[in-house]
Length: 182
Image 1 (cartoon, rainbow, N blue to C red):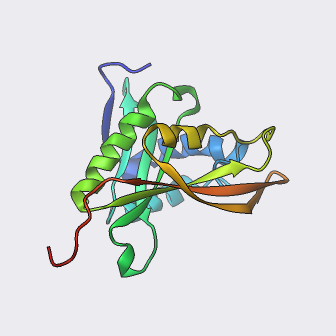
Image 2: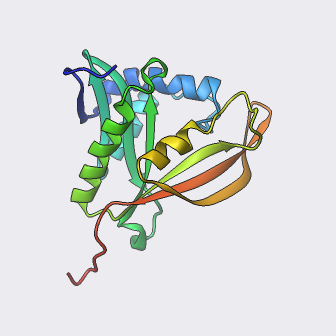
């Protein structure tokens, strides 16, 4: 449950161990992440360092403990993608449905808007069958509640735990349309 001690702050390399602990559940027990092996703390530290060179990487803390994290990254490598980004979020298993995800995404959206980002995109693993034991539709519903809308789907593009998974794309417009001449 949320309390007055809840803060959202910038992530740093020293947070890597806590973030790996959160992420490992998703890698090892779910199809939410398409990674098969949990990255090392050093690999995660490198990922954070690379991301914060250009994009925000945030954590939410409550009671002095990291409860989740969210970050942005490039949507594509071409110059025309400069006003769009891909976003990701992970919440500790025991901290879901406590408002931490909303706090993180609101803070991330504000930072991205200040950077001049126009569109946020989320790629979300999606079950092929409704009774899949490794994934639910929770992420799609969460993003929908925050104003994202489904804009595309790749069918059976990920394979994990002996099951095929779809990948859906959701988008949210967060900034004004502008041109380079403005």
